Each structure stands twice: as C-alpha cells, then as structure tokens.
Image (spheres, helix red, strand yellow):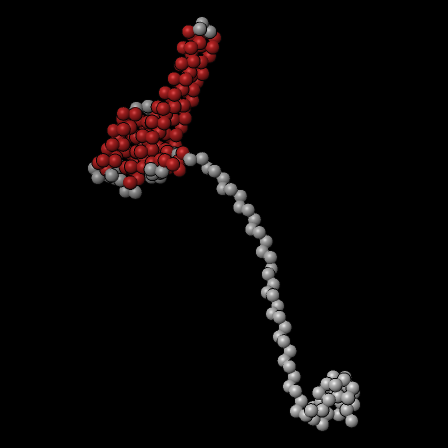
Length: 201
C-alpha cells in the first residue's frame, strides 16, 4: 500500500474520513469520498476501505429503517385501538433499538479507523468479504460437512490355488515283464516290484 495517492493525499486519511462520516451518519459524504477513492485515486487498498464504509452505512440505514417500520407500525396500531401502554412500550423499544444500532455503528467505525490508521485493512465482519465481491460467501451459512462413512473393510481375497498338475504317466518299462504278485509292469532286471514290493525272482 502506498502512503499517498495520486493527488498527494494520504490514503489512510481518506479512508479515515470515510469511516468518520459513516459514524456521523452522513451517507452522502461517505458516498462522495468513496466515489473519489474509486474513480480518482484507484488504489486497491483504499477501494476496499471505501467500499466497506459504504456498505456499513447502507447496513445501518437498512437496520434502522426496518426497526422504525416494525416498532413504529406497532405503536400506531396500538394507539389506534387505544392501547396506550403497549403503544408507549413499542416507542420505547424502538428508541432502545435505534440507540443500540448507533452504538454498534460507532464501535465498528472506531475499530475500522484504528486499523486503517495502522495501514491495515478495516476487516469488518461480513462487509470485508462483500467488498471483495464475494456476496455469496459472506451471506452463506457455514454448513458442516457431512460425516464421511467409514470405508467397508476390504476382505482379503485369496487367489484360488491352481489345480494340481496331473501326474505325468510313467513311461512304460522297456521289457514286457509283469509282477507275479500285482501284475504291474516291471523294469528290466528289476529285483522287486515298485508297486507292491514283491520279489520278482
């Protein structure tokens, strides 16, 4: 971040003015400063601060407007039916809400001004993401990721043992002798039968 802009004005001073006018509830002044920052200066850091100041002004104005409509409308409703205690209660609640909103605005503006004077980003909750143009991420609720199902246990697959090789047939003996006991063919000059063990001679 550069300390001074194109016109020699300190960028931190411009950002501080934007948040200062926001705290004073001067949205028109905030818009003018933001327009100067965006169109004339063109500094990326200053643009982020100016946009956050504008968004903060708009958010406060909308919240105050909605609160005034709700509690002011209820007060008029109760006054129309001559329920004056409820009317006074709605007026009091509306005033308290407006005060709390203004206190919140001042606190956020002071935090932003302190950070800006240090050369840091204002980093306002939600508004900082909106200043980057990421409105969906700022407004989306953080949904916890679904639990991951444990993987099914892998069963050890044993390879099927190959069928035993067929026994190779024994070569027929050269001679035509047969065992006198079991009839198995005998090798030449065999003294005993290899099948039953009987003596051949």
